[in-house]
Length: 106
Image (tube, rainbow, N blue to C red; front, side, top):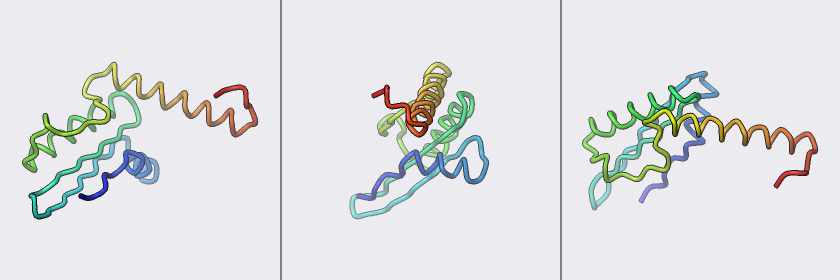
């Protein structure tokens, strides 16, 4: 079985190529059939929703049964996407505090 593509790669491409949404499609064929792996990333809540919806459409167009797929995060609704943006912002703030020598946190 092929390794999964991490969301960090989609995030890196978004940053490197200045794209608000990124969709990566990985295809692999083996003796037991074909595997479709779709990774999406969006910078803001609406970008995350758009990427998730387009990723689902691409997977379906390639013949995937999306309901049986594994989703680590689902940003097809605004609340979840907004939470994810806030989590990313807080993680960045923690990283900045740590880089500046603040060791009071976890």
